[in-house]
Length: 147
Image (tube, rainbow, N blue to C red; front, side, top):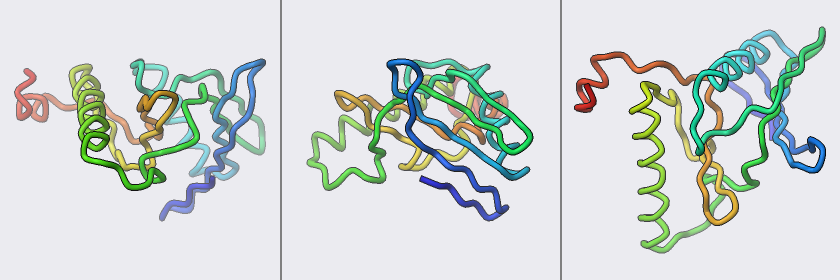
């Protein structure tokens, strides 16, 4: 999978291995993409939650910047076919719980879309693409009744 954005950053995502474990490998070769990966790594080193991708390592050389995370699954909400009402309710409740817990930690995902919701084993939801995540300001938390 390759992500293309309006600001011309190109990031390639592939599945690889780290010993016996599968990993997701996100690599950028241009300045804007490299900066995006570096930003996401910074967020992942500060924000830990069981339903967020887990950073394994980063690699950088003159040509590219790479972020390696634990493999969470091959399917996202964007690729899931038609669902019955109970599945929609279960997925919706899980997703809202994750978002609320992240907000309780003082963070906002920043650009959550169905492509950023990985469906793993047993239907577990893991959020990825945290490069736009940021600390929530006090006014937002107060509006949500969390302060």
